[in-house]
Every structure is written in structure tokens, then in C-alpha cells.
Amino acid sequence: MHPLAAAITPLLDRIGATAVPVEERGPGDVVLHWDGAPAVAVRLAGEELTSALDRMIAQVETELGGRLPDLPRADKQRAVRLLEERGAFTLRKSVEAVAQALGVSRFTVYNYLNRD
Image 1: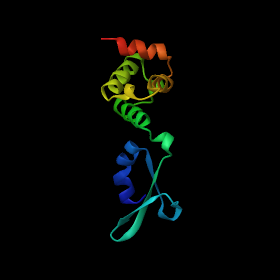
Image 2: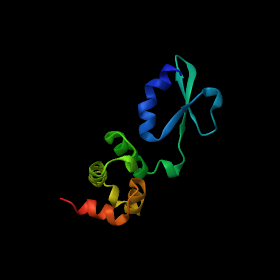
Image 3: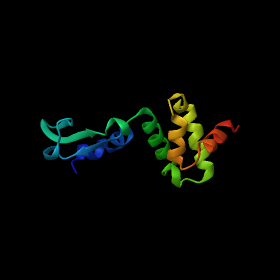
């Protein structure tokens, strides 16, 4: 792996992108240069994977240290609180999407939201 690719990996993870070798780049990829030469291409994920809600969920998973469905109940409740603080539930159909990401029902998400 090129040092530039290693250096930008946390950023790419955060925005839902991946580093690909320059020789495997596609038409929509962005080529980054190192010392004047092409070093790595950045591939953005499809629109459905990089929606605002998907990015928020990915950030919360990173902060809590695991995939939402695998987290214990207390961490799932914390995830819902974090998402609420970040405005996730102002987005259309977000309760359904968060419920699916957590592996719980919409009713459960509403219960988590109503907890003090």
C-alpha cells in the first residue's frame, strides 16, 4: 500500500470512500499525486451508501466500536441518542432506516428516543 493511501484511510472510511491502485482506477475516481506522480485513486461509494444518514450511522459505529446490530442494548440506546443529537431523525424515513441498521423495530427506536 502506498504511504499516501495508508495516511488517508481514516478519512476515506469516514466519508465512505476507498483507495484503489492507480492502474485500477475508474472514470469517476479521483487520482491523488505524491511527489508529482500518480499515487492512489480514491473511489467514492455509490450515492445510496454515502447518504447523510448512512454517514452518521457509520460514524456512530466507529465511535462505539462495532456494528450497530452487534452492540449491547445500552450501546444501541446510546447510538440512538448520538444520532438524535446529530439531527439524524430530521431526515425522511430515518426512524425506519435506523431501526433496520440496529436490527430492532421502529417501536424500539421510538422507545429509545423517548427515554430521558
